[in-house]
Amino acid sequence: MTKEQTWSQRFESALHPAIARFNASIGFDIELIEYDLTGSQAHAKMLAHTGIISSEEGEQLVAGLEQIRQEYHQGKFQPGVDAEDVHFAVEKRLTEIVGDVGKKLHTARSRNDQVGTDTRLYLRDQIQQIKSELREFQGVLLDIAEKHVETLIPGYTHLQRAQPVSLAHHLLAYFQMAQRDWERLGDVSRRVNISPLGCGALAGTTFPIDRHYTAKLLDFDDIYANSLDGVSDRDFAIEFLCAASLIMVHLSRLAEEVILWSSEEFRFVTLKDSCATGSSIMPQKKNPDVPELVRGKTGRVFGHLQAMLVIMKGLPLAYNKDLQEDKEGLFDSVKTVKASLEAMTILLREGLEFRTQRLAEAVTEDFSNATDVADYLAARGVPFREAYNLVGKVVKTSIAAGKLLKDLKLSEWQQLHPAFAADIYEAISPRQVVAARNSHGGTGFLQVSKALIAARAQIDR
Image 1: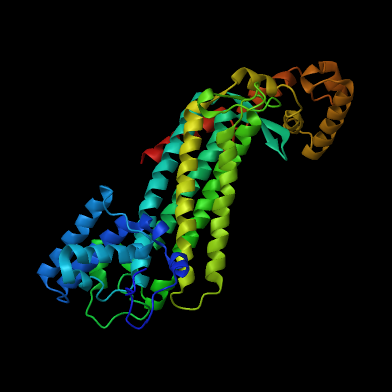
Image 2 (image 1 turned 180 degrees about the vertical axis):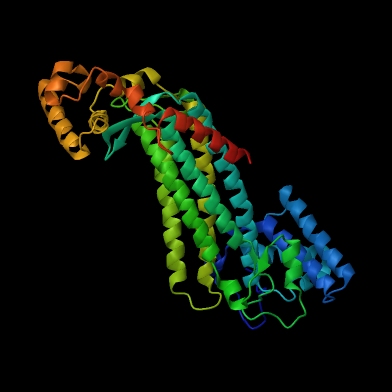
């Protein structure tokens, strides 16, 4: 660190080198440089617009900031720990480029409202990118679902065979989760898109600034109504981390199913070589690394949410250095969500194949059509609870005899209840069991086809 500190002449000596390193955030907040430059250009234009600086000075500042942007893109601007943070690094380089006028950039602004502005600009941009990735993920789900409307797969509750469903219906459940994620990010984005610029350190400024002018330049929807709140609010970041956590929950649930489906015990899908790895010692292995990593990375996003909540829970107004800790977890969560969405999208698109013959066999191996036997009797006037108990008994005796319901003779059915007729076999066939569930939102083929059309229209809007 230089002997002359950038913040004030109040200090008589430089920071201890270890404390300087501990205090510095340039190692991670360089992520904000594009947004810092954009926000600073808007601030410079506002200073000139309001007459706080001259038009010529405003133009010099904007041009100098743009030069820094180009230098950064070209790899020529790479500030180190002595810069402390990205904001000081930019201001220092700007002064080198334009001279003393560069020192006017920070007029009527604090690092507190500056970093709040940068973070919001960053997160607004990242949310739009994540929403685009969610749409791509949804599109792949639909592509697969449209090919498998009449492919059946065992449905589970408590991870026990429950009722067969359309594979498309199963995949559409994840489409709906992703749709809620997409909409939730839109809600978060509205609260992200509020400008704190002009709140100053905590109390506003004595200069005749125009906060609405900078908000308009930066495409913010509104400005913070309270300067204390503006510099200390991180609700928007917490909300994003909540939304990010739910995205990861949904990806992790799908990942878990893919892991199960690819096992020898299920054999519902085959993993392709492009998205699987082998064992260092067991040559027969093909490991589902992609879904396992997504499942594992979910925990780190949860952790960042918890960390942010703990950071905020005891902070008095207004800005506190603790808030420097908001960025690494936020940046990592953004990168983790984007990488996980991309990986799962690739896995679905080109990394796995459903084993339709195995799935067809799977839905004939159990008693998941038992409810349909009860429904069969109920449709013929037998009270459902009575029918339920009767079917429970026949399942019990069938298991003892090593039979499935489809193996029972008609005479055995009729001994159970005279309402049974020869059409019972069609009623409990897996295809009919699925097709018959034609209530709105159900797994019946007609309903699934309608749901696919609606879903496609939803993402194409």
